[in-house]
Image 1 (cartoon, rainbow, N blue to C red):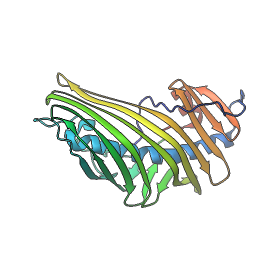
Image 2 (tube, rainbow, N blue to C red; image 1 turned 90 degrees about the vertical axis):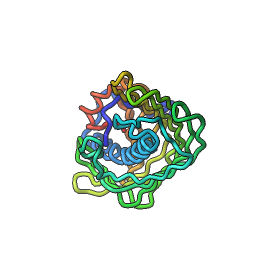
Image 3 (cartoon, one colour; image 1 turned 90 degrees about the horizontal axis):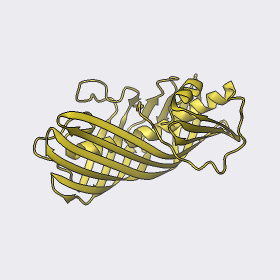
Image 4 (cartoon, rainbow, N blue to C red; image 1 turned 135 degrees about the horizontal axis):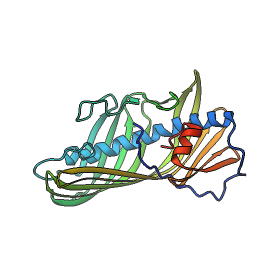
Amino acid sequence: MKRAIALVWILSCAACGPKSDDGPSQEQVTEVQKADAAADSANEVTAASSDAVVDSGSGGATQNAAPTTGFTYANTVNVTVNFDALNIGGQDRYPNATGQIAVASSGSVVGTSGAGSVDYAVTATALTPCVFTDPGTGTKATIAAGSSLSYTLNLVWSWSDSQNWTVTSSSNGSITAFSATVLYQGVTYGATINGSRQTGGTFQKSAGVYSASITWSGNKTIALSNGHTVVFDVQSPNSIYVTIDSFTFGPYTVTELILIFQAYVG
């Protein structure tokens, strides 16, 4: 599920290649679209697995739900995410994804149901082939069954009653040689993703009013099987650089990135 929020990918541009003031060619745009779809497969796996862990002890904090007697996070959390499942409101929770992943988390809970924290070590493993469709271009990225990502996830919570509570999350992890197959305009390409990923999320209800916010940072380098390499460098939501092979374009705003590349960078 693509998140329509401000996404922050931070990657040092010290090694960036020459900048082009002429804008990307159509060929370069197509390479970015392939790479964006591939990179999103890793993003979707980590985002969905983190949401599942957050929801496991909160009764569904990422979906505007909470228990009436406090949060119940456990030292061990094992859940299955079905990308074809419905959300609490009965809609497709992951409209651009299909397949299943197993999420295994372990940590030590500190505190009580009313206030506490836990640091989890999380591993998300694809139980089936998982397919992620880019909503802008229709490009499909598939990860094989057995593909996995590992990272750490810290949760901090406070709960007063069902109308007043907060869960914050922060994650950190490396992406190493994560593979995806990209179907772009009828042609199949291989893609290998490397980089790091950090996320932060806040889910809360105050006086009965629900809100949620998410930030992401990190870097992603995508090597495509046709010989092209794409790097996404987002220094801020309004300062985004895209490097295609040795040429760097930008800075772009989020809106400009979508208009020029139909790429969502995460």
